[in-house]
Image (cartoon, rainbow over all chains, first blue to last red; front, side, top):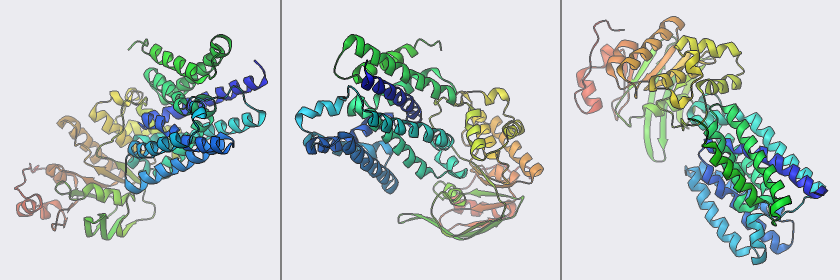
Length: 256
Length: 230
């Protein structure tokens, strides 16, 4: 394993922790499926970036951010449920993405393409994941209480609409980091699967957060090692997702 | 404690509350009654500043509000214990760690219940947890929205006893939405009726005449008037 691969693994491990934590709140907010499609908001930007031959992440970030703000406005302005708002923006994004992305780049955009990462890319990704983890730490109480009841949260002085927006942005940044090695189709898998596994086992908030991060870390590490030394396929995303799914299956062995 | 002047609330073109004025004195209890859709919950939301409104809502300086909702739409299967939920508020309000246990003790939420997954609490126990949650931060005003709507009679009785204790021992101001007129007679100093064109305000025994109730609900009301009163 050379330096680029080692940095990628390290970044993926940090991403694993961030995704595991974000997933817990997404699951409690009942936006797990919505979060799956949210990752596709990056597709039009990725496609345009491939067309213009610029860094795909810049395009992905721009369209993901725009899409996220659009979802938030739709929710706030029309009272549409978050899954419906995300569904509308997702359908349009996927269609635009499929039209603008050059055919030879479409598979990379959907499943991830990165074999290694530059030092600059590593530090940018690391800063983003640390920002996600720190923001969740700061917002933990506001998020939990507003997920539980928007009215109760507001009665405690929580600005619920703003917390919604912050969470969508945290979510998008997590997806963005994951896009590099997981692609738009699988980036949200590490948000959904470890949290679902942990929910099955945990009975308190702290153990939920801890177990979800641990399940995510395990899947990333085992996926990378298995892919690098055994399977040697071009992208690591599917291996990580399969291991995550296996961990989810194992969680059913917990005695009731 | 609370002064409401010319309050109006509308959702789009639908007017829910129109030109409502009333006052609540510190330490007194006001019951809000009215048929479904009369705007009782909307009134509480406006008092909590959760929705936009016209007119004036003025709370006395130093008023600290606690709110017990009618129901919580949350997924109760999330991995949260009652303690986790209360800790979020404690930590947001930066309360001393002892407050949580003291408030829980006051409402009869035992350590065992505090450490129970919220999905496994019974309706009455969950309601107690919500009341304990509302009491964190030592509010001096409590807003109750149909606090016993989904409870059996025994649990209902216990919740109202608790409410009565809070009123008498802590001199807490209480604003209570209730469908149960016998509760209104027993626990409210004043009653506010909301309904299309039927707003009224006064002590329960003066205001709640059979004629007024029939006008308000569109049918003769059935209730038990407890001899001991409030």
